[in-house]
Amino acid sequence: MAIEETRIRLIPKPWGRTDLRPWNLHHDAAAMGELWFERTNAHAPNPALLLKLLFTSAPLSIQVHPDDLYARSIGLAHGKCEAWYVLAAAAGAQIAVGLKHRLTSTQLRASICDGSIAEHVQWRAVRAGETALVRPGTIHAIGAGLVLVEIQQRSDATFRLFDYGRRRELHVDAAVAAASADQSELKVRLHKLSAARTLLVASPHFVLERVAFSPGSIWKLNATRETWLFILTGHARAGPIDMHTGNALFIEADRMHIEVGPEGLEGLIAYAGSASAAELLCNLRGSGAQEAAQGADRVHFQARAMPLTRARAARAAA
Image (cartoon, rainbow, N blue to C red):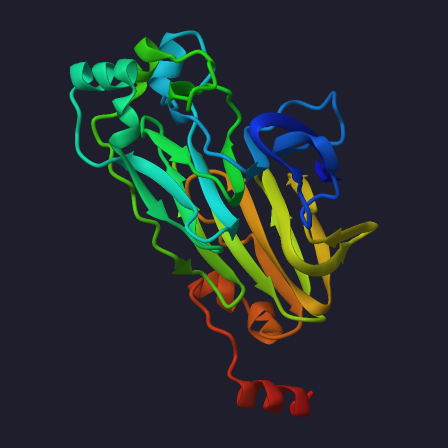
């Protein structure tokens, strides 16, 4: 059982930034590219997932991650599936997920060796609030001018195909072996689970949701699985823990009450598993609390917020 405010590890990267505000107060001469959220207890077992922020002032390498099967064949515990949520995007900022067209293994190897792989990736512009799923085996890249939340399988299995002249090692053989024949981006379709919950991604390894809690509401979070909560905006308290923009919590096999401040709260919740957890949240007080208490969310799981007229009538009757 665990409820922990995470500690932060800053990871320097050649493509990072010196100013990470408002998500972190770090401001130094060294460019930081990643901010990892880690369990407070350094001796606790490693979680299955890794939550982090990425800050880009230049493009990252073009890379690919292996699936579980290939990772185990080369002695790794598992592969790497990841998803990105865009916190901020400069004008024209882009990501690449997949290739413009299919390449054979021979063509892919040649394009890595001569650098033309940079012309084959499928770039697209992104804006704040968008989500992308990067399946194992998909060649991908992140451009400059972005701040991303990333949730991933806990693995450092990354094979570089192109690195913009930074002179780091390219992993030609491993990249060709790990790359999937299906290189197209899987479009993320948002699904409203309840008035407060929107499903962003349901992968074989984790689920990612966006949550929006109304001002003054109180929620019970029931984390039967490994669960991460990242605060986008607003303020709340979970027992002695003060939650605000940029904070993250780790919860596992435990439950907690979230008391939302007067400005409301929006956040991301990621948890291990492949399907959304119907019992993850229960509204104890606030908009829609009466339906939650009657079990509408548990039974239907598509319950909508109570119309304003009904909410007023319910308050008057009470």
